[in-house]
Length: 300
Image (cartoon, rainbow, N blue to C red):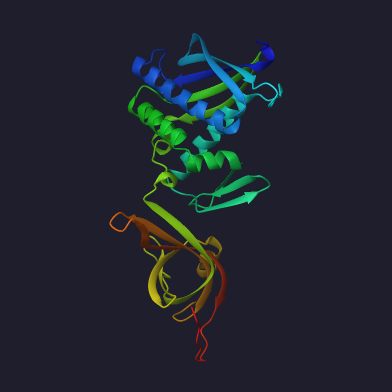
């Protein structure tokens, strides 16, 4: 095989020069399962073989060599370094998992073929649409990652892992996960919880019944509303609206908001259908209307 189709990497377990054999074998098994599934999703027309070279001293380092071939007459591009791009996707998924800590994103927006993922604290990360789709839907990838980092977290001698691309004397870090992130990366992915789902209602009218202007520290900031003639409690996660409240925007009972309302459902096995989980989030406030003295009738 031509060297043009080969890529060299180092997989490093930070810690001692020795490693528990069960940790090494099981960890590499989960890593290979993750790599193979990502490669099939991102480059289905390629065939990538991963080989292991001699161990290197210094923490515990494996030399990895990937060899890529393409299905004849279907797709061929020798300039595509498949292994590096797949590992880059692996790194992106680990970053998402580290930031979300198993939770769903507060907001996901498509931008020029990528997606901007908003984390609960308002920070964002931009990844390819394909990578985020795998994070949301691939049970194989997510379970392999969860099991791998649960294993590494339980081995107290492992201080981190790092994968480095090697080209002659040039080296480029592709991913680097420190021990302090092992637990967050290994948490179950809520997107794969098929017992719960959600739906977003756009431009809904809600009436403020009881605003929560002085939330308790470390408590969820929920307000009471009337929505379609019934009482609900909803968490407001629109940062701009909450900032307006903190800056002095006056709201009161009977005022109206035009919002995007996320409604959560749980699966009821008794009736074999989805039912409301009595959980609501206001993800965007489009308009605020003060209560007037006129008697108004709204069909909702």
